[in-house]
Length: 365
Image (cartoon, rainbow, N blue to C red; front, side):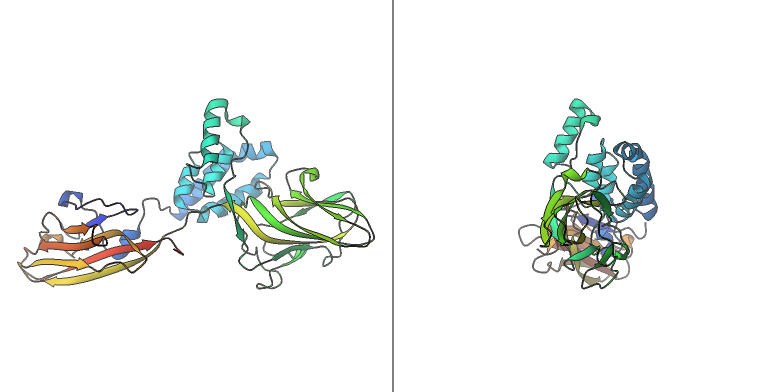
């Protein structure tokens, strides 16, 4: 039985104890310790995105959304979203719970659990949005100009509405925008994610001799639901507002004005459910040459300060050369989660035994 390795894992800081040979897992390199059963291939992500689009296309039509645009945005999002969230989205009974977990809302969150209970009690059709547990993120490069009617010489007409595209935009030039100062004219997207729940927007209405009110609102809703900026015939006006964004539309926002005016719209941040954060991991390792019939017992170097051991392994190039003994990998939780490799080389030649510890932490901690 060649190329069989003995490994043990300690996940989420929970000690699983010393393992016997029957409990051994396979590991060929330190990188193998970071492999996850939740990983998805590109083809699997494509299949899941296609399935979600097919399942929820009727709901999109019922809500009046653009199915093609939504499916395109969904495909991009599924392509990079956390694998566990993507899998869980397939199991959700409603559109809103599907979108919630896909965007990172924990399954145990109050809003998801409440929606699932309501679906079981009163039926799916009566449910509203569950995307509530959102947090604010400022844009990485600061203020992003998405629209400026002066640049395109096109003030909005009185009593008219106009769509404003914010997400997945290669260039804001057609709306008069130029992205962020850091990125320069025609910058793409300014760091805005797909399916933001809401947008923090700065709106400026420029005086053109008219008096009235200006609305900015969710594209899928009537203008009366929007945030308002009042202006006079001689004084320009501005306001910072938070606006929900249409997640099922080609354009996320709309604007409306009671009189003809020029406007400037900057996005400064967005609200979205927390995303799963990948662990920041490194490896601590050492090795020892063991003569024929020799014994070995050595400690795997401790993790760097600030890191926690989340996995460990002891391995050789050929398992037949070594009899490990009952505790080939030994973990001592008392001494800083110390891990050791111990065993006996019953082979006729020397072997090299390698000990590896995976050390992880949440980024920024």
